[in-house]
Length: 373
Ligand SMILES: Cc1cc2nc3c(=O)[nH]c(=O)nc-3n(C[C@H](O)[C@H](O)[C@H](O)COP(=O)(O)O)c2cc1C
Image 1 (cartoon, rainbow, N blue to C red):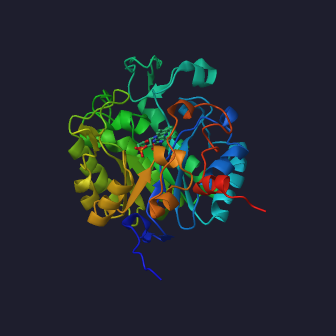
Image 2 (cartoon, rainbow, N blue to C red):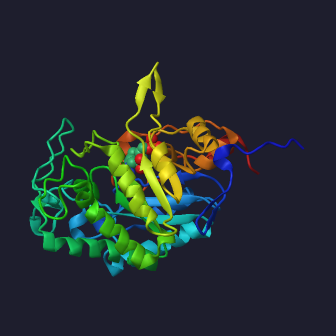
Image 3 (cartoon, helix red, strand yellow):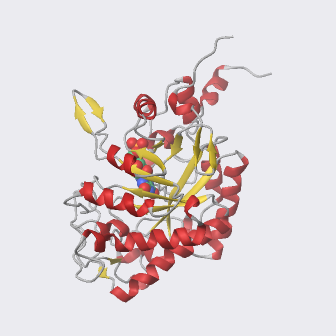
């Protein structure tokens, strides 16, 4: 028998109390197929297709309250109906032996009045509107949250985490990335407040820290991760003048919680060097500073993923578009098999099958050429 050594991505890893059998994580992916903000049975098919024994899946960003929505047909986790609808989806994933975390989010000003209760203005740290870009998307002018309203939003995060536990999720990932509400407070291009939630770095991070503390208090540090993107600058007018200081401060805040499970960080946009995508690998100082499990994401393929795990740059690697298009991505990596190409045009459509559950498995191709009698 030929003994083949496992590639770094396919080696086991202990994440806090959880035993993982490999390091290929499903990144959170908004798919806009939860009609009326209620997760649908087709999500059970989609997620269980991507589940493996000992794998980690992070479910799509999920609205913590009715004001949290910014895209069509995103799921919620604030009502009993939504909790009940998530249960069979979580069960389907658990039956395959995978761990399942829910990403909880509030989009803040990345919304418009059509998504808001009673057509009201979206809420934010600021009343500055996002500059319309060439995509044609227009986000409404937001309403600046009053200081005394902020504890209510923190409570919405707390309740969402509790509800996720009731639905059966193994834990939650706080969405602190990509220009949504937490970043609208954290980053100084978006936060123009003069109360205790604005100004100094400590003040700008206060809201995120209160959300972290509330969620940890509700479900326990070993069930909480967070996604952060201090370096991402070209998204939703959210830039910080000192991303290194911001990231370092947040690492200290996470470390205050003994056993805080994971920090999931997004690389800066990739540069193209000599015709090849280059991942900037700027996250190392944060990985060194943070005491828990580190997950890196953004532009990784098989080779880059193996490299960063082997080097100890990260513990786990989250894959977005490749996992979207390859339900059996860990297996394909293991076998070094060819990958399906993703179809960008179906990322956010509302179809329950097309571009969602119809990407083929490796075996499907094999079956095409085999005659079964
Ligand atoms: C269709 C689509 C939906 C996404 N939705 C989310 C989301 O809900 N939450 C989030 O944090 N990131 C989201 N992202 C970003 C991905 O999680 C990931 O960071 C990004 O695609 C880069 O990784 P990749 O190069 O492996 O695709 C989304 C990306 C895509 C393509």
